[in-house]
Amino acid sequence: MCAKAIDIGTSFIVGAEIKDGKEEFRAIRNAFFSMPREDFEDMFLNAGAFYIERNDELYIIGEDALKFSMISGNTENYRRPMAKGILNPGEEEAVRVIQVIIEGILGKASYPGEIVVATIPADPIEEDLDVTYHRVVLERFLKQLGYEVKIINEALGIIYSENPTATMEDGTESPFTGIAISFGAGMSNLVVTWRAKQIFEISCGRGGDWIDAQVARMKNMPVGKVTSLKEKKLDLSKDRQPDDVLMALEIYYEELIRYTLENFNKFFKQTNALMDVPLKIVVGGGTSMVPGFVEKFKEILGTVKLPFEIEDVVLAADPLKAVAGGALVAGISAEKKKKKQQQQQRTEEEVAQPQADHVEEST
Image 1 (spheres, rainbow, N blue to C red):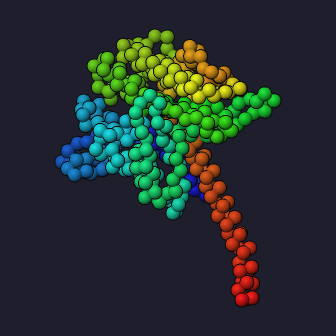
Image 2 (cartoon, rainbow, N blue to C red):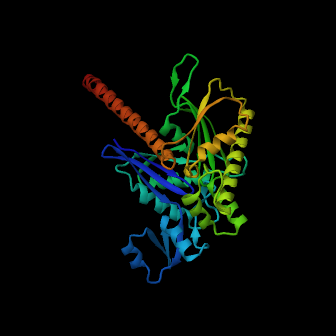
Image 3 (cartoon, rainbow, N blue to C red):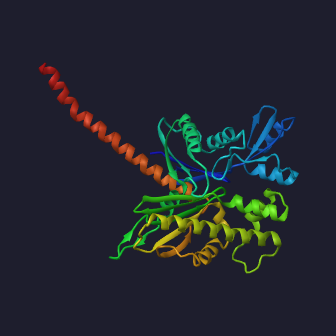
């Protein structure tokens, strides 16, 4: 039984599947660096770089794209297929490059109709953005690769991966019940679930890219350098940051968390939702990977009066892979259901065939 999953994130695209009875993940940075083709093609091929040819240019894809940008100091040629959680409307090569990355991670379907579960964000509550074009383009491409496509909210993937539980009044545990927030590069997505059923899905149009852009502007630095410093050196558990750039990153991390919680709180109050048991919050996504994130989140959460009680806040076991891992859980479940329906249909046909033969003999 096969199924695959793909988390199509602004910063990273992460694929998941079962191989030899174990989960296997592959992540590629969702970026590319464009440069003149000239005589570099053989060199990149020999070096094992992930690239494609496009007219008279080479597009270096993935982690090497960021490295080329930093080494050369060329930020203009460092390009992102996605922005704010969806296909980047300002990047003319967005669709082509993201298709190359997706096929590089997933490959074609193992057989016609193999299920793949892909993740997308919800429409942001505070911005006039629509995910329809993004969803349809990606869904059509996955179908071209031979897959039967299922779409879920990326934060729902965290629920399926981490399985938060809530304690009922009678002491029983309700599985897959809680709140998940996916702090991605482009957006911050949230879902509330009850026994694996999605109750709400919302998103805010700020994420890790917003942090990087604000710090780059304040410190007059290339965004790529800020991103690299954030990923390699930032530790939110420190009482004092060792330099001004890291201090600025900490400040904007705090602002992102506060902004996200306040917007979600406003949404919850408008829904008049009644949660009569304490819920766990599970956070994931690449932006939550910095050390000390959960402690900082709890600190700021204490200043926001949510309309229901929070039992605890925990970090996903693997924040970068949690969304794809949960999507794979959904894919395996869908594949089992599909096989069961096919078996039931075959059984019904076998039962009906003798009756049909008898009718034919009687007429």
